[in-house]
Image 1 (tube, helix red, strand yellow):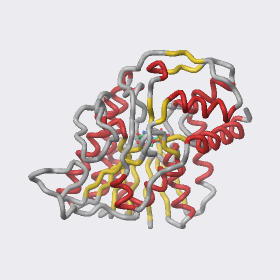
Image 2: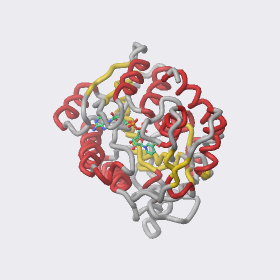
Image 3: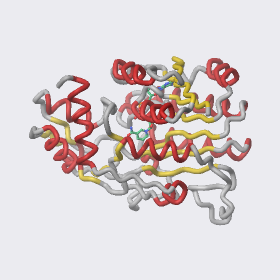
Length: 335
Ligand SMILES: NC(=O)c1ccc[n+]([C@@H]2O[C@H](COP(=O)([O-])OP(=O)(O)OC[C@H]3O[C@@H](n4cnc5c(N)ncnc54)[C@H](O)[C@@H]3O)[C@@H](O)[C@H]2O)c1
């Protein structure tokens, strides 16, 4: 299989690419190496991928329409995994246009590339943030997701809607994956685990939002990758049970699916911090702060649809995942 992975120098992109390369797929990794966070870690992730003969890197922006058109026409990918996006909820308050450029304009370019070049399956990153202000727990794919509370979430929901139209109009099989707070080695420097670990090792206080009354369905990177690969290997199909009289938002008469990938259990932020404290052997000094605009107080995934489709359910306990992250962090930063 020849697979395009966009966002390959990113956290989830690197880990997904490593698994594909390890099993012998040909991977073309695309990334614009932007400086939303320190690009050095992106270059270091890339160096791991470049150790494989079946990997090639293309430095490009998915919003570059002629560039993406040419790449698809020349390469004729079998399948595409679109992970390139402007991520982060809080950053979308200050930088809305970055989200439109990468997540909307860029995503249309990917859809068009797939459509015109007979790509057999497009798997793309959505997000648990699409559940927005919902308080019905756990979050399931058949729930309404029409109340996003950040522009980031709105662009992810827009991706699902746009994907559906391409599945319907052109028969392009598309699978959207709603990732729930992903963490692990080589993780993102803008996310809590990384920020907390860094601050604690440097003897600085950590910023704890919503006064610690935050719950997240923290999902370990290997579980996310397992979900990405298993869904990639089973392209979305039209759902014979789909009833337009009572439409289920999670499936369709078109070859379209969306799946949650989460650890199936909300963890209190304070318990997460305790796991970091135990792994580091350092007690955190906490700065208790209010809930940030755009943030939601809790996430909790129902993954029964993913399990029914792939036979897989995430389950790495946070104590194990956090200690693997801390081990990596100490080695990488010699801290
Ligand atoms: N990490 C999480 O907890 C989480 C949760 C939900 C959804 N997601 C989604 O999963 C995907 C991967 O996330 P991640 O955590 O690996 O983030 P990341 O920022 O580490 O990876 C994204 C990569 O895409 C690249 N990129 C961004 N915009 C681009 C563009 N316009 N053209 C080309 N490359 C571009 C970046 O340089 C980066 O290397 C994203 O779509 C993100 O929104 C992540």
